[in-house]
Image (cartoon, rainbow, N blue to C red; front, side, top):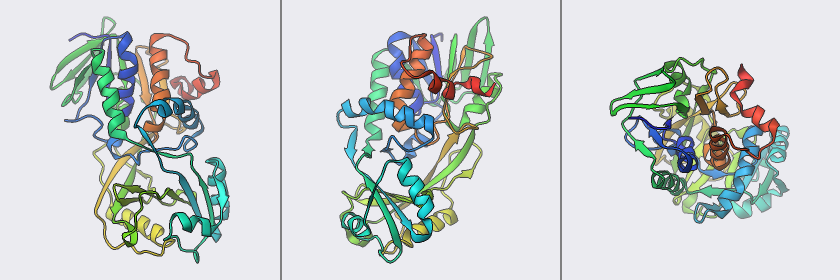
Length: 358
């Protein structure tokens, strides 16, 4: 089957690009799993905090803010609080400054989150500029928009071979073979694997595991209005979720691309770090899971045509910030593929271009 563009990867990166690009091209999106957004996209902490992440991610996230604010029902207020012990003063100041959090007293912090231990926590900062993202609704929106413009979305389509002949990419899957003059690599943790299948030099992407545990609401309290909580130095974080609390050890363990799962010991260590600064103990874990956050060598995303083979397009390395940066990232990718002005600074384009690794 022939089309204009093949997108490999049905996570938030591939789906958002399909929605942006579909009015201008015939698109086939291939997803290896039985459902879209199976891997990292379905395991996100789902927070829009545009000042969080590498510098280029922050710029993309800030450029995405107008989209999110205009998108009905996608965002809901959450807020963000940073906590630090006395011996974490330097890391606390760095993190609070980088995310533009204002200092508050420990008593003020406890007024919002009453289980904070005042005998352990010496520093606190807060800002309201963080919102929950309804990731399901956002994924549904992009999927609906892409399909409305004729995008073919194929699941159970694990790529088994990629060849290029007579100016066309030919992609083989269990669902059939597909061809197009342009191939977009939005395969998440598998981006370098896909590149090698296509005969393209890999860029050195690295997947890291990030684990999560869902615990009951501490002390039976109503946590719905609590902000997201970060330990200084991102040693842990916690966030209200459907009447419970999700807690992450903020682990970053090197992994091969796979369907990730949480390590019990890593979770236990992270829960202990969280528990050490709270007055309520963790009595049980309701569920746990893990996802892979994939980074390029300089930890900035890679968006652009491969410098050696321009018909191969990289959309990769979101590093766990795919949802909060996807409106601007997908618009940029669509503009580059269509050859239209991006409206973004040349410096940012250079920071995101795969040419920086050439």
